[in-house]
Length: 162
Image (cartoon, rainbow, N blue to C red):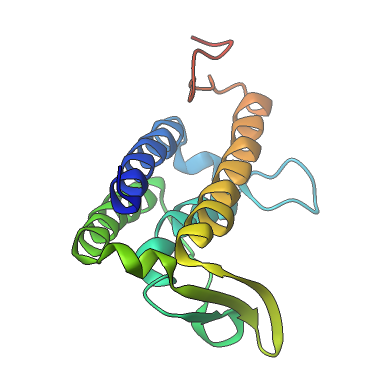
């Protein structure tokens, strides 16, 4: 299986899983946070969606600098976030489909000004910086759902609510 094909399969599955969580959230929950030091539910959900979209936004560059290339996604409604996720999936798929296999082996750098956070092949960035990161935050988001008594969807098998 090609690198491109494996990325597409995982991208579609993980986007579907994120969509299942977003379906359970209403606008009234967006400002809720479990602790004063925690992100609000809306901020966390927006961060997860923006991570999905990093494939087409951040990996289209060889160097991504938080100081110049990043603006946090801010949303006002859950429907807006669902739309961004859906459009992002299409943009990601289109980008991935057009790229040659060797593209994924090119070096990618994540930094904040002069501070280098990561240097790895783009395929590694998809796995480590994007996918693992969004799965981590999506796990946090399922805890938010549980604390709000919102049924948690089973993402990799049934949940206690299914």
